Length: 214
Image (cartoon, rainbow, N blue to C red; front, top):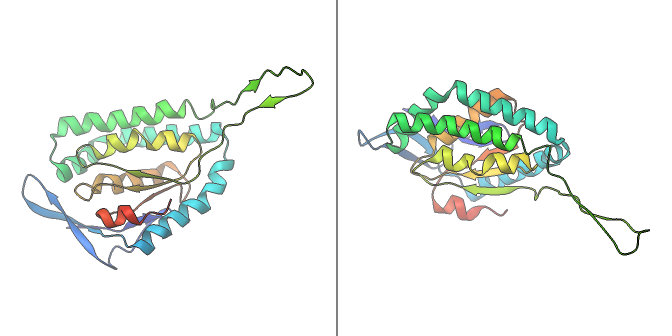
């Protein structure tokens, strides 16, 4: 039996403290992993960790963010087979589909890495030539991402690398029916050198989702 804590501030926390729920293997009909049901306090902890990390991630230039996102893509590709097993065990999809989805997730990270250093503002022509009018693109800040059970990693990676490329930090709330692969993805973020707190994951049902104060 696997036990997972919440992922906050770059580390797994509180795996054995507080309420838990089981992850069902659809093939066997048995519980194969235990996960934490995040409390409102813990969701707020994740938001706070992202807010602290936001200051540094915001100041990280696009080229540096692109390098990290490309490294994440490489690490996902190297671990695609194992990640596919986690996903199939958790949501019941056939392994050849989840393996392809992991490789697609890596492609999404590379795609958005290409945008990270190209988020330009604009210089706007004015009637008065002595005046300068321009725009600067800035991150929103901390954003919340909620994903579904049927393709957790693909659905997450449709959103996550775009948010990171633009300089935002993130709190993820995966479906309570399939959370394991998202938590395992956090191990790959650590290997790839993603700074602490840039991505945080809180697990649980509707209460965990509604507790987020972003």
